Length: 252
Image (cartoon, rainbow, N blue to C red; front, top):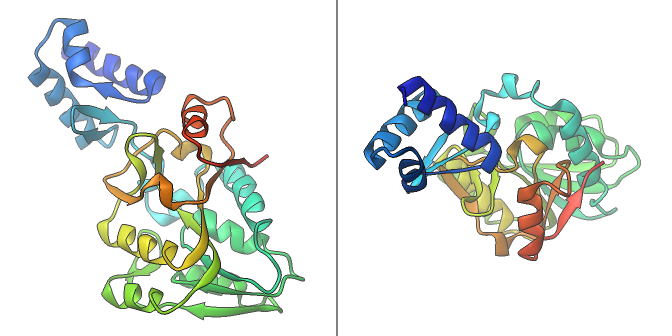
């Protein structure tokens, strides 16, 4: 099999199965595992897969820069945001993560809602400045421009001194084995710090993130209250998560 044919085969597996297991591909094609691993390295270098031990997983489109992500599945994000905004209770405290889906949540909060929003995202703060009944608390630190959020030691320390009823958390990948992931180590640490300060944490995951993975794990499944997604409830990954006992809220 030519290199181009192997490449197409691997990309097809990622699309159909949601993963590539190097030893299985090697056995199926009658080639060495080293050849498969080289092919996966090349695909990863092009941003077409995320390499993991023993193979690869689909790469998340949410690793693009902030402005580019605004155009990725906007309808799906709006559905997820609407379902998430409905969880926010009057007079409660909400920790709202940064990112494009969280920004849609901010825009979707009812004008009559009185609550406190705690965030490390200047874009979230700007979106809520004219909201008449929302108190804002901004957590500061080094700005991670990819997601337009504060990260680093100062931001984590600030997060440790707040508490909330609910945390709405964004990720770039949702996968049964790889877990809840994002593309930056400091951002992952900040997300963990935020989630640790809320009674309940729900993950915001529009459909393009389901089955995808990034390099750094954010949280284990047992530390979240549920997942909000617009993905089909019969999606293979969604069904696997439901079988594991994870609450999945379908946004429609």
